[in-house]
Amino acid sequence: MKKIILPLLLCLSIFQIAEAQDTLRLFSKKNQSHQREHNPRTYNHNEIRTLGGHHQSTGFYVGLHSDYSTISGIDALSVGGRVAWVANHSLAIGFAGNGFFTDPQPVPAAVGKDYSYTGGYGGLYIEPILFPRFPVHLAFPTILGVGGIAKGIFYDLNYPYEYTDGYIDQSDVFLIAEPGVELELNAARWIRLAFGFSYRFTEGVNPINFSDKPLDGMTTGFSLKLGKF
Image (cartoon, rainbow, N blue to C red):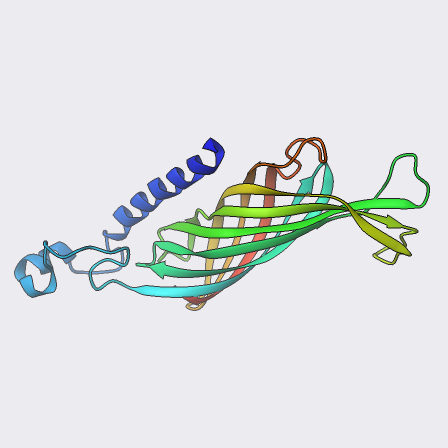
């Protein structure tokens, strides 16, 4: 459980840094605090403050994501999506989900039988963003959620996925925390491209049915984000 909680605490710490740097108003010629002092109607210290800040920008985006990793030492591809609300340019909160599959592998000492791993996971998505107004900047996406994995057995498999028969041999569910770091490019006002790395931490996969923590490990991937940032 510590592996699930620690990425969340790290994510919140990065958000605090992102909020601090955003108050610099890098592209503004006027000091915001000076304006507030001379115009009391624009700011009230007794007001409840929100993630979006006082009269600050809010936005949203829809993203597509793909990454490469290994599952139980087998090459695996993951594809998925993200939907997030963006607060004050510096924090995205929403939901994310990924599906994954591995290359088929021959079952040891069994002629004509192959196996592969498939599954998916998803949940809460939190993404602090550092210096979002710069053309190139950093983001720290984190997924906290649940997922499932299955081991499929196939008979007389012909590449890519033509076979005479198949069945699910083993399956299980797990908790997952996946913190990461991405280098983001502001390709246009409504398009962002991101390249980065993440690390999957899982809890709950039965080591009797699967190798110990088969999904744990590094991933490298690419994201396309469309929206109002």
